[in-house]
Amino acid sequence: MSLDEVLTLSPVASFQSVGDGAVVLLADSGQLYSCNDTSQAFLRHVDGKRSLAEIVDLMADEYEVERDVLEADLAELAANLKNEGVIVSGT
Image (cartoon, rainbow, N blue to C red):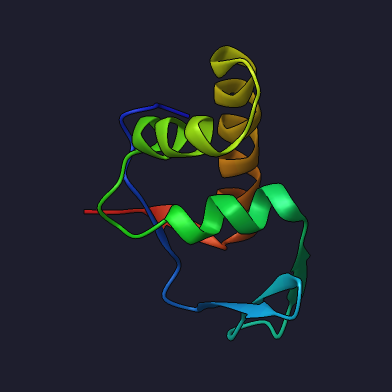
């Protein structure tokens, strides 16, 4: 996945914080996903305006982790969420 790619939630996805966690519901399939801390933080920044690189920058400020490790982890997470239909490429 390109770091320049702008990401947005899928039109059929609903992201909701619940207590200390978060869930994603895909309206078309009824599939419900629970989010771990990383995916919750990532999805908070997915707004259809930020590129993956910009999200990496924001999260690098939040977490004490090497940027290249974070970049690889978030690229993998974004690819998985895209494959599941949770996020799509923005405009």
